[in-house]
Amino acid sequence: MSTRLARRIQTLAAIEISLLLSALLIAGALLAFGFYIHTLQNELSGTRAQLLAALSRAPLPNARAGGNFAGSLLLGTGSEIVFLDATTRVTVYRFHRADPQPIVVVRNRGDLSGDPRPSGPLTRVILGLATAFGLQSLYAHVGALYIIVKSNDLTLVSSVRAFALPLLVALLVAVALGFMIARVLTRQALRPLDDVTAALQRFASGDLTPQLIAADQRHELGALAAAYNGAIEQMERAFAARDRANSGMRQFIADAGHQLRTPLTVVQGFIAILRRGGFESPPDRDRILDTMNDQSRIMGSLIDKLILLERWESVDGEPPAAPIDVGTLVADLVAPIADAHPDRRFALATPPGILASIDPTELGHVVTNLADNALKYGVGEITIAVRSQRGDAVIEVADQGPGIASSDSTRVFDRFYRGAQRDVSGSGLGLAIVKRAVERAHGTISLDTSPSGSRFTVRLPLRPSSFDTRASRAAQVDTRNSR
Image (cartoon, rainbow, N blue to C red; front, top):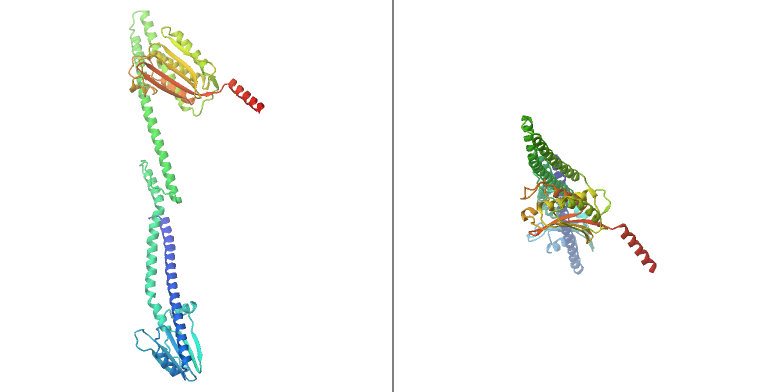
């Protein structure tokens, strides 16, 4: 606890706890004192009753005779009896219970020197408290005698003083205990603040390792620690996302460089040949230029696909797209592909009227890339079907083999991943574009593969057609009219 705030809080808490413990001790002492005064008052009442009962049977002639009679009684140390007649004052009291006989002092009526009188510090306080707690003298008049039964103030004061030192020690212990309790409670209460401060100082020193701290949300500082832990967890997720992004960027740069290396190498080689004049005839020159043009188109196509993916990744939210007829658009997209490949048979099942909200250009990327993938890596008939199923517009593209290896099936949608068949032309971005386009339409894509072929299944949220909406409204109107 080195901070000024912590010391102030600890001091205030120690004062409050010490005052509370001291108040409890003083309250207990006053309660015990009150019980003692009550017991003493009962003793005085009993002594007075005993005297009156004895004097009613045998009256005494004077105060001296009363003193002799009282000396024979079993008088307690807390009581004092005074007998008064016309000329004499007799005081009877006992200092110690072990004394065999009480002390009897006889003197003139107006002489008070024989009464036991306490002195010293706290005497008036003790006697005042005794009076406040109900201690009072008792009086009686029997014949010519006046009888006063009162407390022995000397015994009362000495008895209370005997407990003063233990009470003072107990108060000091209460103060010390209050400081210790305050120290423990303050340290425990401020621990979340200390932990958060230490963690922030660790961050300021350059150690950015996220570390959670213990948090108890039952008080405000615990809520502060919980908020810090939430920020740390968010920072961990941000760091993890940054690491994934950096890793993906490094992999992207490596893959893009690998894909661009071959066409660039080819173009650079032909440029070097052209500079040396290393062609003997116009056909050789035309062949070199055609090859350079093809490699340039490959690089352009690769760059266009990368730009497309980057644009789709950077745009947040749902793309603005109206419902379109999926079956009709798929049939229109597949027709030119089938015409361009007469050696492969296409089986289409694309009924119209199945609507889904997706940008037509993005659906074109989905269908053409899946069809191109089936042409490059599959054999036999290519089946393309559109249907509605459980609230989805489903597009299936399937071939008849040889399927995709299980080790490749989990990565076919990764950028630049081409599997084992690297002799087939392509950039490895087609299926990544398909996956992102489907996700932007809030759909899903899955792959089922086996040695007999591969099947890609695209599911898009189905949207009701205008005809179905009008029919539904008409049905509702008919139902209301029938009611």
